[in-house]
Image (cartoon, rainbow, N blue to C red):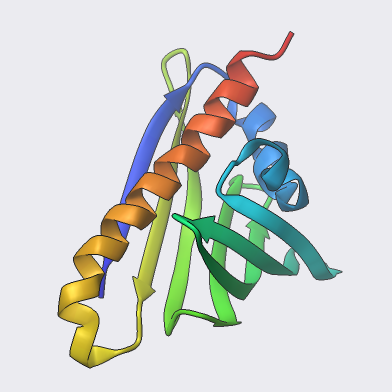
Amino acid sequence: MPYVEVTLPVNADRSQIYPILKDMEKYPEFMADLVSVEVIERKDNTTITKWVSNVDGRIIKWTELDNFDDTNMHISYKQTEGDLKKFQGEWILTPIAGGTEIKLTVDFEFGIPMIAGLLNPILKRKVRDNSMNMLTAIKERMENRA
């Protein structure tokens, strides 16, 4: 099963970054690969969100359960239904000198064993690129605020 982990330092405190990460509905405004994110249900420290992403002209859709740990400024997510057999991960914010390191992990499985060996390396690269694009978009949003 492919696993992707990307990190990026951002010149901002994690208390400034965390609210941006929690506001997933606004991701498509500054993340080019996302078509839409819709909150279906919100209760306590969880949301159920419906996602539509465009990866190289291919539309990928899924619904996920998002868990928010406000004390530790940590988000975990897990697909409940969608185009992949497995899709889960977490956002981790670690204080560093001069700001915060953002880490995004994605653990996924395509779900067709006969072609997984062929497609998983391609999908892993696409997921890594997409994940880094998300971190870069957050970095630019945080560091270019006036």
